[in-house]
Length: 309
Image 1: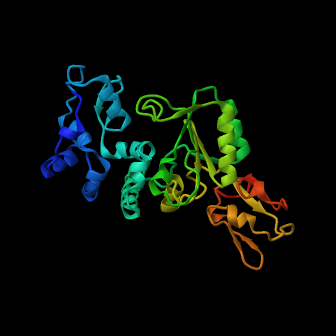
Image 2 (image 1 turned 45 degrees about the vertical axis):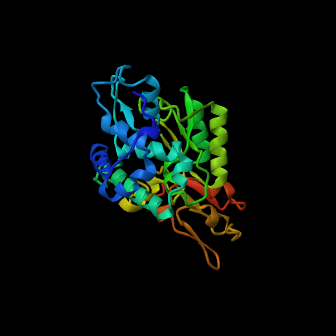
Image 3 (image 1 turned 90 degrees about the vertical axis):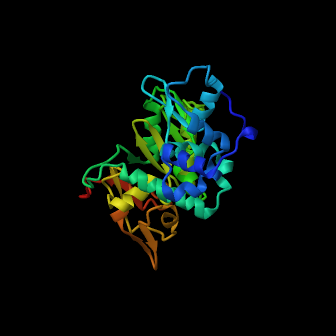
């Protein structure tokens, strides 16, 4: 069954049924017609997991729905109905021109809901690390890339695509995941090699993005949009999550008061008044300030050795 857009009409009852079936939250139902085509809506309404053979859906139709995030895959590789939360992540990176036509208010509503859903899905014990993400300086991030012998893929940053407000690069997320329900499996990733990955990380560093590493890849994060650091502020988990092995150490005696550290830092560790003031309470140990300090007044030290958690 290949649905034709021009032959479909969608009623308000269809929208209501669609929202219930696809788990669209009540506050976002007003955006359904902007995010989903009539074809999408009726595909979801007519979907039956018992009828995925080629007599009902062509492989082209199934792949299109999978690529758009309408379908996901089960552990045994069968297609199943997705949901709004899972689809939104796919939508913001794969249909960027459509998303960018939304108003700023609409984008903020989507982002606020998605961030809350993300935070609600984490372990609520604030003494624990809910994910394995670590903040690493550039040299250690490059070394991490060199150690990997897995296929490498480049994706858009879904966090910055959702908010779209900080102006920093978005084609920056490096992943080693290519299994079911990944961007790579959906055909949305760009295959790259180690040298390209290292170049991307170096450019991200120059642009002022922090490097966070986990077993599945590398994110290059800002302090405004990225969910890890927004989550850190909400949980007040500085130094704990995302894990920060390092903290900056400031030698005021050699500082030349140029203010580059103030511009580079995404977490307001530095302030410039009559002289540079450094408060490491929120320091993530990313090294962005260290690798651009012309006076070498800054260095990273082991957080535990410095007496911080």
